[in-house]
Length: 283
Image 1 (cartoon, rainbow, N blue to C red):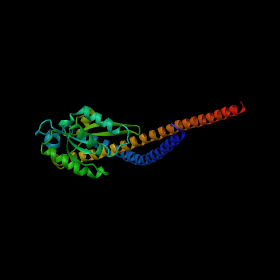
Image 2 (cartoon, rainbow, N blue to C red; image 1 turned 135 degrees about the horizontal axis):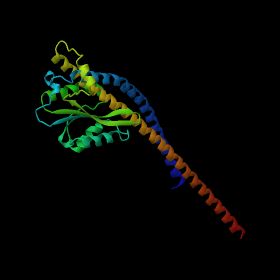
Image 3 (cartoon, rainbow, N blue to C red; image 1 turned 60 degrees about the horizontal axis):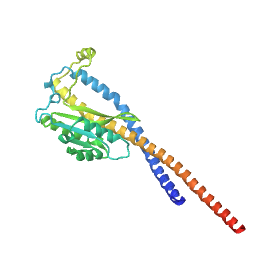
Image 4 (spheres, helix red, strand yellow; image 1 turned 90 degrees about the vertical axis):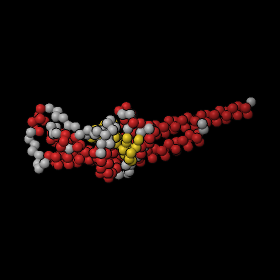
């Protein structure tokens, strides 16, 4: 490798560094926004789930069809898979797909996919995609997704419906998670919850109120999972671009050392040639 080739490589790596640094800055801005939304939504989701848990723990399953297990095609499962449209986000999708592959038989499962990467993976693994809601604004598709899974479940096409996504934990960590959407099953965790259950008076009609409340709960859960997945995606991409920028700096440093070494060797050889020529003339 000559000095010209080394210089060209240094210039190429510098250009790559500029790109990764720009992508890091963009991902940082998006990450902060998504993290803020995810953090602000968490108290509401926690309170809502606790309240519904206390309210429905001892309810009869006849109050809402969402509390019953589907009878048609017993064992048939529908999975909502939330992934990303773009790559360059480290092991974000890989960890989710590995978790999914270990949890279910993909080739025997129907899927609703949100994200191009998930659609490609399911097709490759032989899964059946019944709907693809991939878009740049997946939150706008939540009502359509909810209506589709609700109609399919009430028609007893599936015995259960689950969602797989990456739960946002921190900037450095997103955890692959499964949540069973339907049928809804709440169980009292302790005696304190049992006491609180007695305090609720459901008016005017438990059948109407509970059914609508559970539908709103499921729709909000889907929306929250999309928010969590988006926050994890931008965090993972920001970390990946930061690592790429740091690696580019390391490569530039090593190539600069190599360039200096080659240049020094060239100077040394030229000096040796001069000394040899001088000695030859003198002799």
